[in-house]
Image (tube, rainbow, N blue to C red):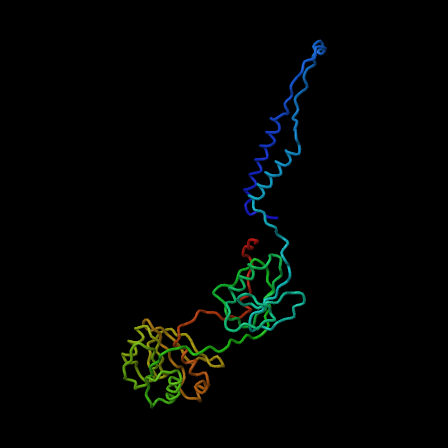
Length: 333
């Protein structure tokens, strides 16, 4: 048993009050003189010893005050929680055999494993922390996750208990819908492969397609021309928009990062800052021979993703996201 407010035990000092009362209060006695006793030699009075009258009343008073002091200290019972092992399975992971353990989905509400598997991205990191806080302190916890964990945040979970971290399954994320972006396309028809970009832009619902010298305002821009960038392209970037140019465009020298790779890991598109915006550049000629991604069904979606706001990092290798220990244990309910 633990005490939430140990200072309340100071009320036990009130137990002195009934003790003092019972020592001070004596049963009244009226002395009666007998004539024959007057001639007896007086003996010295014995030393006074504490004596308690009415023991039952004293015990009741002491127990009542001790109970009040204990209530003020707010006792809670610990160590009696259910210590059944728990196996939490993240969506996309293989469900293991449980034995006597309780199996749940790592999803809001922690539904039982025999219910339908949750769909969509789950806030895995927050759910792990919540599960650690909800379970009894002595309940063993096993977390089963896929190899690629979707739903992480910027910090590895720090828990109050040691967790068995098991990786089972690939955990491929479902394809996301193409971002809703408005793209203006300006291209030179003489550039090989520009028709593939035009078809992808039309598939995304953008039909503003014109020549390389046409002005455009307030939208993301794909400019497929050779030589130096025209002024209107630089103005778009300075305004904070994203500009995608072809391989033959002359761009300012700056540090670049790869934002799109092919299946072999080779770069397809590089990005660099330009003003308050970004400048993207194809690294290959726009032909199916040099860039097979042009013929893939998800090419429009991948193209639109280049112009979407950069999402917070949420997908990490599960091996690098195992929970740490050291968090304070939650207070018992």
